[in-house]
Amino acid sequence: MISRADRIRSALLALRFRRGDRAAFEDLAAVWEKPLFYYIRRLTRSEEDAWDVSQNLWVCVFRKLGQLRDPDSLAPWLYRIARNTAFNHFHANPDWDALSGVDVDAIEDERTPSAKFSSADAEAIHHALDQLPVPQREALTLFFLEEFTLQEISAITGAAVGTVKSRLYYGKRALREIIQREASHNREDFGIASLPATSTPHSKDAGKEAKGGDLP
Image (tube, rainbow, N blue to C red):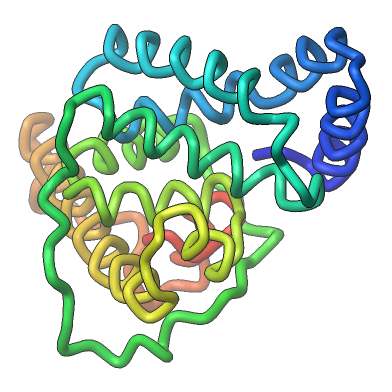
């Protein structure tokens, strides 16, 4: 996740680059390289593909950064280019599933700053994310891990805000089911299937399993 201070600094670096300071580009890449690679990795089939896409991404950013009119919109602009570069790498978009039949207004653009999760929880979440359809995986990554707003995710993906909400709803539900199923399998492997789970959806700690939001 990129801090507010880094976003402001990045906007200033973009302005410096537009004025001819090429060294500013290296500083900008240093800020965004890791979060953008993580996002690309969620969209690609392998780490090797992600590295290829990442290299192409920064070539594209270098060529187009001077055309960015509003430096404050740098973050969604970078992620939109990353997304397009990843899809161009495979010469086709993923199968965006049609999601309907849910009250999308139930998905709010808010997070719980105090929510924490352990390294084991983080590993389980990242593993489960990789099993989701790309549209849901992308929405959850951008909203909860990168902390973009619904409107910014809409700008990045080109999907309507209502569609973004639907992907978050179905993605959260599927993610929760995957994590619970795998946790159950792990307990069975250790011969403790008859023991109660350490937490339930109604426990006071249930909402602390996700960083920066209300992931399962």
